[in-house]
Length: 289
Image (cartoon, rainbow, N blue to C red; front, top):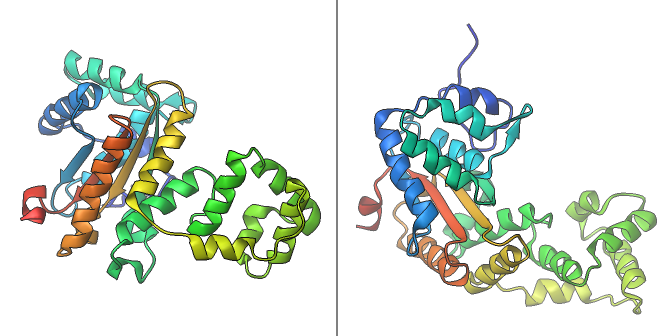
């Protein structure tokens, strides 16, 4: 008798357990899942997965489930692995799921249209901007303004980010994570906090330097991901789960090329440790022509 939403949303965390428990593992999905996990565990030449299907076919549900399963999130005191295994009919699939889950990983799941700015889709670096945004947010940095995230990242590298946030709170009487949304109005307090923790004179131009000097490149993004992975336990993986990428890049050869270059760069910088899973209504062959 309860209302049932016909479309699973990547950013909806209100019914995760129900979405897992009610997922139907068909024979076709089970067969393809076996192949996918075999590559995820063993492949030395791949780091991308393209999930295609018509609207309402369940591709977003599968993507979301994979993001939860590979990270093996805990939901209501129970791991996703334990909720999902009873659905599997073959011992081979169960074994591969256990092997895949045993690989420590972090999942970043997002709908690309929701994360992109209104105008960014027409820009040549639109796709990269979204990847940088969700990566920065996962790291605890300010995703809405990449140059502010770079400022925070540099503080983190020096071991000063936590000290900066503490100093800022004492000066502004508000958390940095709240005030950075109004950075232009809070610059003075930012400069005071930075001067306090860096023990240097106030530099009125420091944020302007970050804004002016910020440049977006796929190679820089690959290096940032590599730095993050290198700080994690051996064998760790960072997985990007991108819903509705097909609609986002549809008809735009440059965006599709950028997606391919991002995947290739992540593979070059982080062999086998940074994967991209995407959904689309069209098959990959139809999109690339």
